[in-house]
Length: 342
Image (spheres, rainbow, N blue to C red):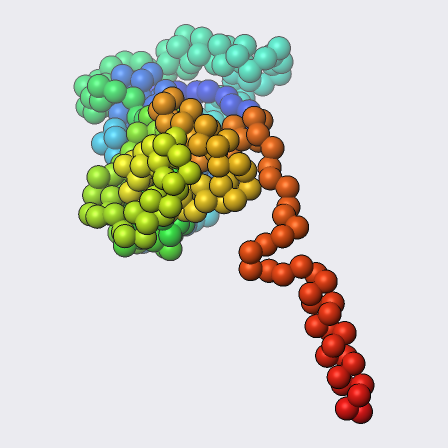
């Protein structure tokens, strides 16, 4: 990064580039200069510009947020016109021919240390060929015009898309976050930070919901406005059926309803499925253990039963379905009747 007036520059070598690395290099440069520039002229690389355009270029969202954090305005060059940022192009050539030509380094850290020393003691003290003045002297005149640095560094985040499930949640890293009910079935933009997660409208980029990051897999983050105003009757009826299996099942089902509300319907159906496949006493014991431990996860109950109980064997008799011999007799009678008529 080269300052337009003094030609003082920040130089650093990296193995590879990405949007986050590109942004962090900007922050390091601003910290090195002791302030941010009012505008920045950049090339149309993908880390900075997603869609180059003469009149309306589309900036990379993360890069745009970084510049907004520092109060900098981006001025991308016209496509295929690198001469518009000739000062930085000239600085690159000067660095390659003077600081790096014929040199070998054991590591990237050694090369950057060499560049930092050379930049301070050689590049900054030289008399620039165009201005005919020392670079450091001009930089000291330019420094007061830089923008003051913000109190905090920019907080980086990842951007992705998710579809809102029919229960009103999106899934990120095996955790679940509620979205407005009107977004069910549609795609939303998600910004994932270190401590927070934001759900945005893909068209207006309005922040619909903001949640703290879940610390464990399977956890749910629910906004109060996304909870149903009342629990449907069907949920209460399912809970009443489950309560008949024992007090543990009743306590666990009620905890599901208290925490999840109407969206506990799927978990309640899962409890009924467990009561069909396991002995009700074993299911009641597993649910009681989960309820007393403060765990509200059907997956935990299912795992507990898989380790501490055996599934019920298939029944030979059923109160509705007759035995197989009955069907054999009916088939034989129908076949004989068809043969006799023929």
